[in-house]
Image (cartoon, rainbow, N blue to C red; front, top):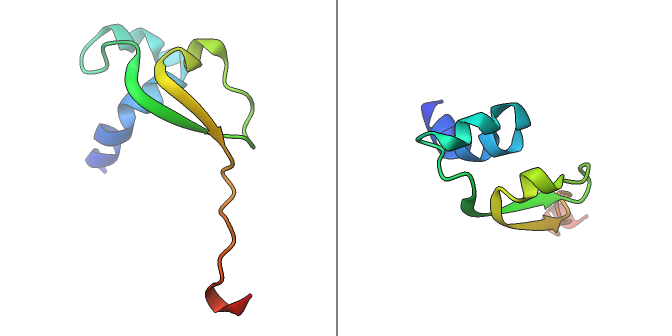
Length: 72
């Protein structure tokens, strides 16, 4: 469970506006993360404040693509 917090914590802190104060402190600094956030088109639009906390934001569908497994 700790690895989940360690791996996803920096992203989750940037997605929750109530936690943005933590971005000025280690281990979350600097505020802008050098990473690309992939945001699902099915979700509500991402606001400019949260968008600015990532190097890049790509908007893609979160719906899995169909597969040929099982002959469907």
